[in-house]
Structure formats: C-alpha cells, structure tokens
Length: 431
Ligand SMILES: Cc1ncc(COP(=O)(O)O)c(C=O)c1O
Image (cartoon, rainbow, N blue to C red; front, side, top):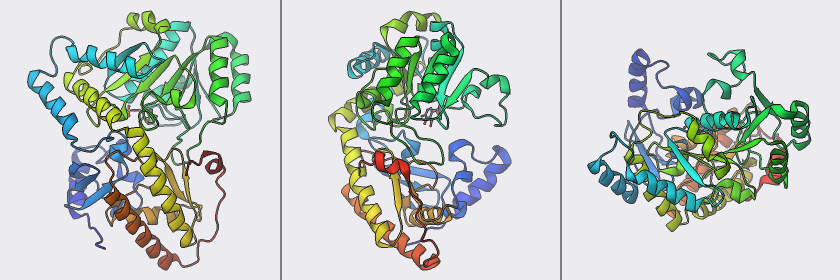
C-alpha cells in the first residue's frame, strides 16, 4: 500500500502562516492532527465519500467535513437544486419563496416542532435559542453540561479561554452529564432564576468518549423543566439526521421546546435552523435577530433537496448500518492484534479510541498510519459516516485498518498491553 506525502499541503500552510493567523484556524487547525506531518491540510476536490488533497492523494473520508457531508460530496440532486436556485437568485432584497417551502417541509418532518427560523452556522441558532429562553422567562441562568460544545460565542466557552471574561460565563451553570440528582439540586437551589437548559441528545465532549443518556434521563429532565418553567433546548447541530429524520429528541423519546439543526441539513451548503413550539412563537418574533446572508436562497433550496434525498434513501438507517458493520469489524481486527478499540456514541458518528496507551500516542500513530494510506481518521474528534460510503469503501477501509495495526504492532511490539476500562462503552454500545 502506498504511503502518502504532503509536500504541497505543507508548502501552502507555510504561505498561509504569513497571511492568515495560525495558518488554519479552529477545528481545521493542524494542532488537532497529531502527528501533523502525516496529515493533509488542504483539500482540492471531493466526490461521494472521498476527497483529494492538494498533493493529489485520495482519501475515504470519515470526517465528512466535520459533519455537513451526509449524502455525498457533489451530490447531483442537491447540487442541481442549488444551481437551479442560483440561476433564479440567491442573496436578494427580499425573502425567497423557497424559505417558506423549507419551513413547511421541516415542520411536517419534525413532529414536535411548529415553526422554523433560518441562519447560517450552528452557533447562530444555539445563541438565539438562549436569547429566546431568557426573553420568554425573564430569567438569566442557563444550564449546560460540562464538556458540551455549543459554538464559539463567549458564553459557550470554557473558563480561562483567550478572549473570554468572567462575566461572559456568570449565568452559565455547567453540570455533570447523566447526573439527574445534581441537576435537580441546582434547579431547586436557583428556584425561579433558570431560563433554559441546553444539551446535545447524547454527550460528545471533546477529546473524550461519547456517553449516551442513561435510561429515563431525558424523560426526567423534560419533566423537571416543565415543572419549573425552564426552556428545554436540544442542540442537534451535530447529531441531527444521523440518528433519525425526525430529530434526535424523538429518537430518545422526549419533547424539547427548541431544537437547533445545522450540519447535515444541506449537505455542506451553509444553513442552520432553529425550530420551536407554538408557545414560543410570539417571543421569537419580538427578538430582533438576523444576518447578511441568512436569507440566501441557494442553501435553502439545497437543504430542501437534501432532506428529501435523505428521506428517500433512509440516510440515518443507512449510516447506522454502515457504521455498525464497519466499527464492529474494526474492533475485532484490533483485538486480533491484542488491542482494544473503544467505540462510543452512535455508529453513524462514533468516537473511536485505542485504550491500551493512556498517553494516546499509540492511538494517534494508528490513526495517522491509516490516514497516510488513504483512510482519513483524526485522533481526537468523533468520526462521521455518510450515506455515500459504499461497500467498496468499507472493504478498503478494513484492509488499511489491518495494515496499520500490523505497522504499529511491529513498531511497539508488546509495549502497550494495558487495556483501560471504558465505562461508557458498555451502556452505549450498539455494536
Ligand atoms: C453540538 C454542536 N453545537 C454547536 C456547534 C456550533 O456550530 P457552528 O460551528 O456551525 O457554529 C457545533 C459545531 O461543531 C456542534 O458540534
């Protein structure tokens, strides 16, 4: 198998550092790709489940643009709808008719929600949801879970981050995931001062295993919120349409007041959506909230076509089935080499980690060995499966996975025999 080199990526990055702060910022930064010399930084083109980097290397992509790619890069159905709309108009002086069509479609699709509001990024709508909760309740405090990510607004950040001041976080209370008694205690303590609770459907903390909600957790949280007049906000930005088509709260059997969608909505076209119940509609209409591109028609047409395509191809079920097969086989291959591969979260967006080396060097090395053979795995973020991943992709992936285990086994021999237990894996495990 060919080992890739990344000369052009590295040259582009050198040029970038002179004119772009950090070269590449945020979640695309090489800082999270360890060791960076074994990763491409620039993607030239993409098709289906694969992309080519600036050096011409081809990869089967298990990051899917960190979530937005769901029905395949350059999906002809989605692109055709987007191009058709582009020819008619995109960013114009007035809302496009397709906006109404998309809102109607979403309201029909997401049973428990009565209206839709569109923006661009996930953070636009998680931030708006918090504003709505505060305005609706005339309260200040927001509950969230430790390690939960909701975007880059200052209130969403962890204390001590650059650019964040104490006051930004003054009314944010972070709790332990799945700790219902802890949540109840905080709610009782603050009595009538909690505006909202925001959480992802299951817990996806950065650099850590994913954790499913304990049985009955969401139902208890929902009842507690109802009893205390707290607005329940589901951040479905990452999970949305990778568990089911009706919203992840439906999947886990509870009813929130507000749901935030983004990533998989339009297969990469920039759009996010906040959906909510009738009870909050008046509040939403009185809060001024907008953006220069929030009425762009092209992403709306793309979202409509993508949602229809996802429904038709039963995309969530397809992704869950692909992931289940792929990751259970990967676990078996790992164990044949004497390693333990922990796979937590849903099979359509699992967090994967070799547990034998707590320093994570072994895991990083294995991910990099897969990547430089054309299977793009990052070491410290959950991966994504798309409905465009094929049987051929799975077989090629498993070949490379096997080869990469062979390489690290030879390199480290029996140095890493320790297998750390993974608590959340047991209760999680749909594999
Ligand atoms: C769960 C969750 N919430 C919110 C966001 C923020 O979305 P965006 O980066 O589009 O603002 C993300 C982005 O990764 C996310 O995963």
